[in-house]
Length: 279
Image (cartoon, rainbow, N blue to C red; front, side):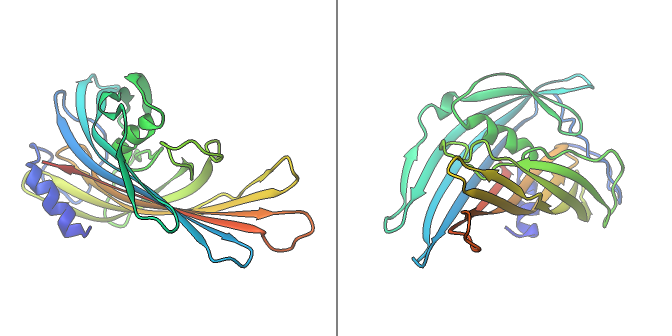
């Protein structure tokens, strides 16, 4: 989605009164009590498996849904937020077959409540969780797991760095990579600040490279993980929150055995996530 489309999308929502137009901003999560936002998201994962001289096999899985975000209270130290699915669908495709789609059972009863600090630090308070649902709900606030806002004021071209922790596994489908977490050194850059009549939009880009991870299996083979992250975010000073995000996590997994100079198997996992506030 283009930057203009994102801006138009937020305009349609009708942002509340906010800070005056300015050329510097301080990102702080501090929405007012009672604010309700509706978000839509699409998470897509493509797994490409290379093995010997065979043609690569491709598996795809996607989640599509809507989330309601309601602010319960804001006491100055932490903001209580209720997050719940409005809808959630799961789509899958394996080699040689068309897409299949199901409504995820129990999604409409899945909710969590979190305490959120002004830099987006989060702690779970309560909830009715379905497997994998909590991670998707919490990510709707940050755009990517573990994003922490900077302390300092920002102008165009300024940046901040942080470490993010991400898994290449799918949150709704248990698998053998559920315990794999990649540490990524990420750099956030303020691409532009766009003052508007009722709020200011901050366009932010992010990029980073994961620290290489190696794991030895019981059979003596070695798994080597490497990855990279890229994305864009839009922050609204009217909603004092991210109003859209698009991220891509690329992970390569090489399977090596003793005495073989080249990997005997390679998996390339691309995970994209798009979300935006809607009217």
